[in-house]
Image 1 (tube, rainbow, N blue to C red):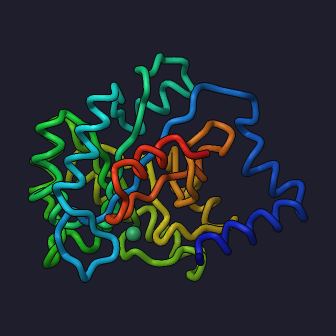
Image 2: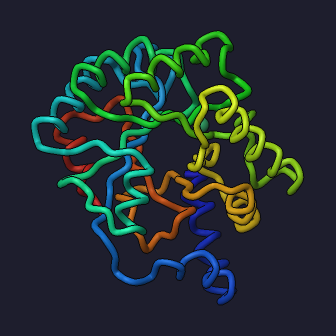
Length: 252
Ligand SMILES: [Zn+2]
């Protein structure tokens, strides 16, 4: 609901400010390559106290469905190359993402990803890595070594970027980026806004910090016309039955 309200406010602001709209939305206005559904998961566990969890068996069912239906899981880098540099994308491209860096991404989701050969991106909160219930750098490193997992940034402390000073925004964005580079040896070029909250200054900060892409939590597939820093994601909640999951993949 909150995200929806933020979205509405942003849309209202866009109507008011032409330049604002210009900076954000027009950079890729031309009809471009095909949309890419970006799925958003959090915890893969049977922990009923967590509203953001999905049961491992249900997650496995969804991964098997994607595989059997000919979906090709890709990385953000591959999507970027396809969208902006003309490199061909595979048929039925899809991106699988996990937010927050739950340890069960390693213990429960990773074995299923290995079994099905699906690639995924983990948006880690770098300041929480190694905390109880969260992934460790070693686990991230092990998963990345498989070639299936890519770690990107969900800031240092999971702070609402719209509520902190510009200086704090930059610290959250730059420090998490640097930490991933230092610990995993590759650059973090994609950001997931904590809680999906964003405003103009946060988007400017993300760009200034050197990110190439950023994702939000508005429903529907990601499309070039959304611009690089407001790419939509489809939230997959644990209560979705397979038919609902199928419908969510193609819903506008
Ligand atoms: Zn989060």
